[in-house]
Image 1: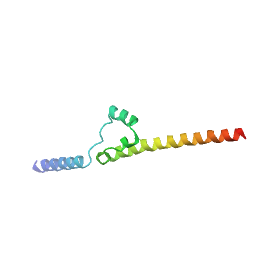
Image 2: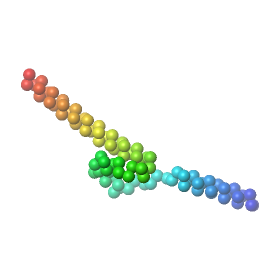
Image 3: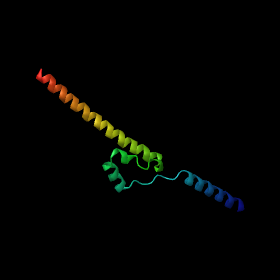
Image 4: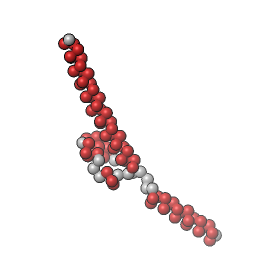
Amino acid sequence: MVIEVVVVVVVLGCCLVALLKHPGEKLPRPDLEASLDTADDAGLFRGWDELTSSEQKRRLAIYQQRVRARIAEQEREWLRERLRVVAKG
């Protein structure tokens, strides 16, 4: 009986240490999601050191998506200009 109690205490202690060492991910908050969509690029990186690694990756992905959209728009504008030049002869 004593050994069983000791085993249970050790297992619970190990679980507690693991939980404290690697806390679970927080659920995404809708208000945070909306604020990230409207935040400027600098806003994505505010409080960077306090963010979890998964949140950092998510914000980097949002930033990367924005940069790709800007580049695509610049390329479309360049192509439109080239088409105007070619059309004029």
